[in-house]
Length: 394
Image 1 (cartoon, one colour):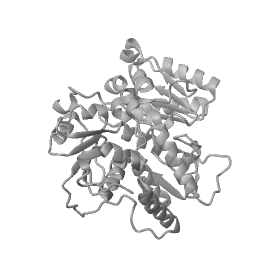
Image 2 (cartoon, rainbow, N blue to C red):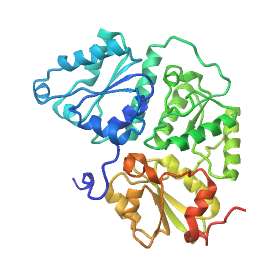
Image 3 (cartoon, one colour):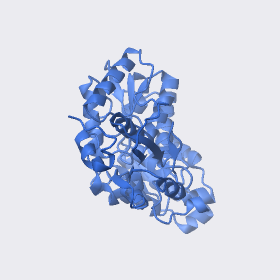
Image 4 (cartoon, rainbow, N blue to C red):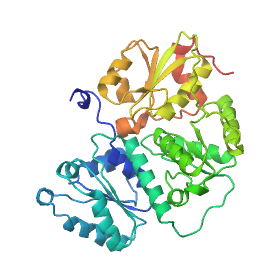
């Protein structure tokens, strides 16, 4: 029970929020099966795009007697009636704790609705208890991709020679302005993005993944999806993002090498080199974000460890609960870079740099967002604490 109790931090975004986030802007109808509590958690705290959006996110309105008696026909009819009116691209039934505890056949109900509507319908047995939001993102992406491979979609296919995709990306990991800036960078490389400007998702990506020439991986979920696509379709990928002019040039070379088929290493490939640095720091973030930040800080001379909240990832430390975070931040670091709520746990003697992570602090931390792709912003925030190790750019 110890590792499940949060004394200082809010619960991190759960797997049902990851599923819903992946499906949010794909034109489908998302039905969260609960009595409104988990739907409210998602729409109010885990989905910054929800306010003012026309995306179809609904609560099934699960009630006590329906749960006890297993009266599934009532909510099945609600979903069918709405679907026949709205004509969504697909229907998704997303789980919450109660139906998982009492027992509910998500796949079976989804299959029944799909047969009665002739609309692709998916059932996700998420519960928000064990899996992280990253697991939900991967689950949803794999389900859609596998469905459209079994039942090929009709319609036009993008035949761009340098078609790129950003798999698994979500506002839970990356703010809108940072994501759009990285979208522009990929376009500057001559790539045609399958996602429209500002959009995190694209249904074409799931309908025709074989047409993608390269995947640009910006978060842990995207890494798992890209690895799956490389195995299934032979599509290469580049992981991470650059900070500063020097690393942007290295990144561009890596992307071009991957497209040419002659790249032997990933952009953020880990190194066994240990820097002889008097300045040591800790970054707690999504794994890809953390390693990308570490690559930049190491280029300046600082030694950095990366901790992640959503499961094991490459050469990082798993900090997926409050106890592990408390233990790690209490170690002898010169600086810690993390979500502002996590920084509250860091000792006063340690320098703190806020890097909001929506899956941790939601709207509480959003006002502290800043352009962490801009090298000048880093130098300003690093300040005197790392002057002894960091070489300021001219």
